[in-house]
Image (cartoon, rainbow, N blue to C red; front, side, top):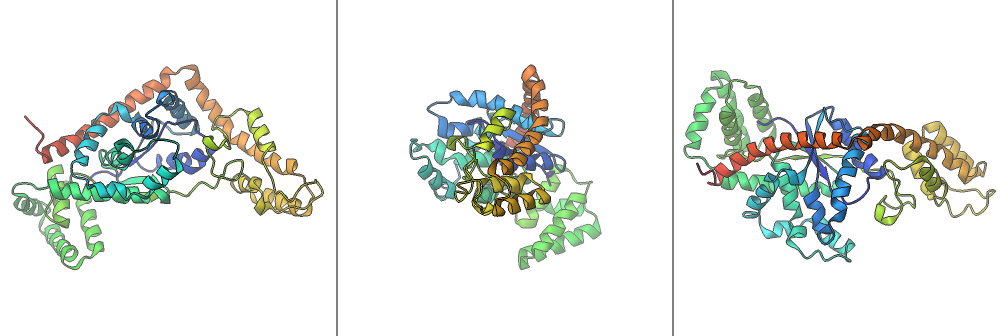
Length: 400
């Protein structure tokens, strides 16, 4: 019914590091060549944990956008925008909150996890409790079909689907819907109309998912239908409601295999990160001072790569011959730790060189970034307004 579209965002709460690149940005760069993508700076989301000191947000917003562009996000392929510049996000969040059960928010697994992990902050606020609902509004307002997430975020996507389904059930009622849907079926032509009705019956009576998929594919190919008729027929397949909001699918992304310098998850707060645009000297110093296998007290001691955080960097950055050289040299004490680290240093610096080059143009002329974002804000807001027009009409708020 609606075109495939990818939506994702990040909170501007600090510098981007190589963990972000390998965990998310590389995936975004690939996706932008496959589907229309909207990537946004989630500055309102940053306030859920930084409401008492928002000074970091504005600076991090522009730094993060430069990092995205430096990493390879292409504004000619992707729409880049700032969440708070599209106020319809907040409106949809408000309207969805009217009908979202409180228990749905309280059961989100990451809610209690973050409460425990951020015990030093006062997070007893609606903003923190309601952030999954704002997250849902961020996605649903663009009728996104796919959201790239890690496994820990899948429950958030499932809740988005439940919210969209509940909204469509409550507000997708249309006077004379069934009669209008049946008239739309006739517009498919006799053969397609017969097949549509058969597939609808197979799905509604027998629960055949393949029948639903086949019917949807047929409607996608029916170019003669108006958007209104197409919406009705999609809704008629699954019941008797218009589909106003789209249920997004989680597009699972491989978890980053790049740990922090100490073997834990890479995080600025842990002091174990390498910034996306860190200078060469700093990269070299950080890698050279990384902890290694504690069994290698002396140069002549044999080690075990599996016990060394540097080995995990080799898994990401080194080719097979280099890894074999490292494993053999470490276990036999044939190489020292500094020798082991050198290929990693060189690989990271080589990876970052084009990032520094791409970033420099935006650092020299910040107006370039602001122009890209201004255009992106306009594109995003146009799409958001289209959705909100239908949402307001469905909820009886489209006063004319």
